[in-house]
Length: 123
Image (cartoon, rainbow, N blue to C red; front, top):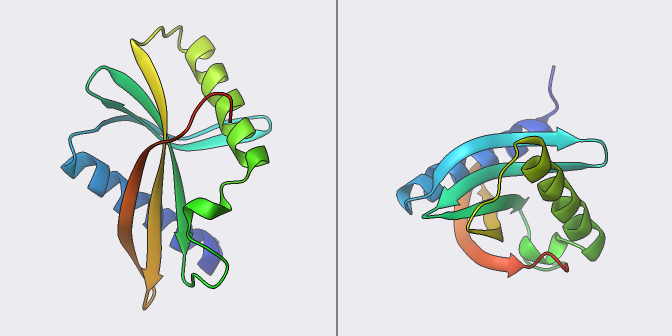
């Protein structure tokens, strides 16, 4: 059985995917795992392949959800994206790393923002 925290995380990812769909992204994969990394959502925004990190917070006392994507986390996402491109034998016209900020309000996820190009492959 999953923990309340993991259920909230999953609901945040579902809300993020819905918001991305409204914005015209075409989701092609989710919860892609390799040793040492995970990408929450992989989607196309036009011809650009976008690797999306979903971050949820219930309180902003220690910063925004995007503030929690550390240098180490960014490096893991980039490594995982490289693995995904290799494994799927993809050479997209461009890639981008986005962060979706979600606030948990009364136990429910609310998408606050989609930060396009939140970081690059150099982290």
